[in-house]
Length: 256
Image 1 (cartoon, rainbow, N blue to C red):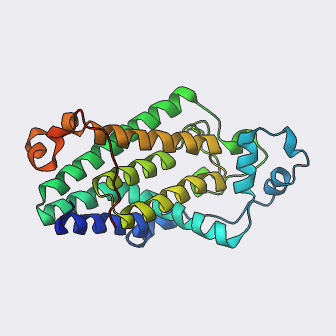
Image 2 (cartoon, rainbow, N blue to C red):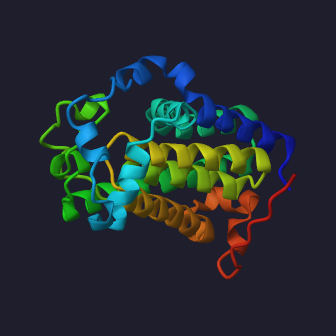
Image 3 (tube, one colour):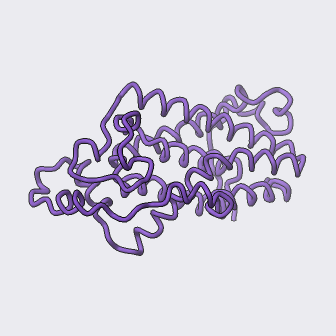
């Protein structure tokens, strides 16, 4: 059962996940989205032969070419909060653990740290091994993200998998497994989905890139949680229940 201290730590991290853009306002401004490129968008979005496109390109067009404010505004918001959360989620978890002095929260923060580190390493390694061009490289569209306008040579061929999708899925899955409460899982899943789709909307990833990243991040979080008896230091095992999980199946029970 999650105690009051654990709930407090969970709420602290949840605030970072869904409101990171507030304290990271400066960084979010650096990632602000410029106005839509005028020259390339119409050419890509008005393609008269969608049947000849692959499923991946059709998915890219579906998200990239959307103009509905009810969809574009949340995607821009998710994009603005992504990096502040990536930089702040793990420190926030450790701060919450330090304040509460709850050993189970310390163990959860440790698993979150391991999950983020492994996911980042796998994403970066895979990106360089695959070298897939980003959509704006070989499609008639322009990136909407400042970091990719103009396209940086070192970033142009690192499309697969999406690091944003991978890290957001990893962080949300890890914390949801540690604290399976609706107020953690629901907002976290919505935020991670928004971050993943925003990468397609920005024109810097294909749908398959974000899908692969999300699967990778979720898989790493599930693996770390399932093997927490092996990856958790001995000093944290007694209080976190990590010693009893080597042969136990992974079961997620959502508490309301």
